[in-house]
Image 1 (cartoon, rainbow, N blue to C red):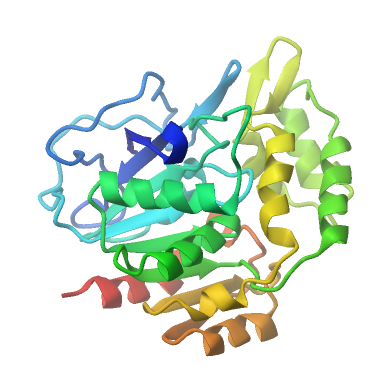
Image 2: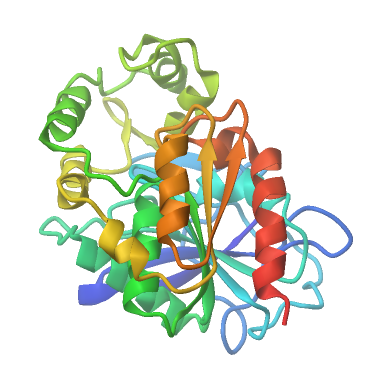
Length: 333
């Protein structure tokens, strides 16, 4: 369960954020008020039981409704802030199952980044590194989250550590989930372009989405139902079938701004405590992850067995067990 907060990002782009917290006495999340009182709810916050987003016709999937009932006693702006940043093509709801396993004391907000989820997808962009970092800074400042703990996955992790490097005044700590600091190169970008162009979209049904991304996609080495579910959550129904809520060309533009360069310099500028988390079968190799920890002035390392790139989504319990001790350590006064 989460409550929508509307935020203005860089260049006036409209961003949707979703506020969570742990339910007292056990796992689970309940809605929290925004700064100064009740949160502003977005127009489409319906969700189905179990907390998974529901795709709507030609609309982005939305985080689930806030449930009725009393607020948690620690629902106040002074609780230590945590901002969750999803990866390319993701959205805030992909953190839901992992967040549900975190216990109390944190003010947790998940952001739909520009071009993703329920946030604005400006036709003219920009979708630069600078824009994504400025958006994250705007969310921290407008929601009063700072100094914040940034938790980022993939592209969101890069945004998180670049913000930590540029604005240390805003960031208390950092969690990097399966994101490489090395350059991926032009060949990687061409492969992604070919991959997007090979999608059989529009898909006739959500079952077809599950099947293609979980089994039939040439990039899938063995059947992966969780991958199919991940992509089904970023599809919306149109008159001709199911299409992604994002524009694939905007995703390629976003990716273009980071794949050609290495990011070791900005990583070395991060001065706050940082946890690097990788799935054992993810995209971030162990040697590179451990070198990232070495480069970080205050780095720590964790890995999740049997997990791949979508580690927080496919292994939420193991992810929370790896991350929560770090969060509690850096957020305890």
